[in-house]
Image (cartoon, rainbow, N blue to C red):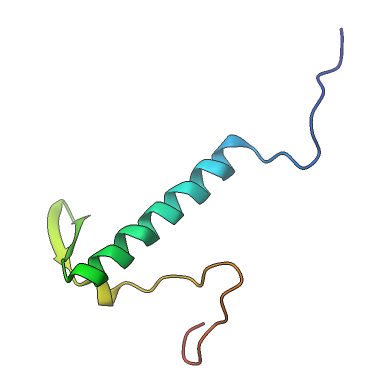
Length: 70
């Protein structure tokens, strides 16, 4: 049976999908902050409004971590 070639630097699809989802979620939060709109979340079986300022985003790659954020 022939061996399947794999690229050593290739990431599994679920890793790429998770990273894309996190980038999209961060973009939603940034836009909500920019336009002053709430974020709608599903929590405890209900839709709730959350201020985008209540959501802590992880630093983007290459962005310095500000004091008080870890």
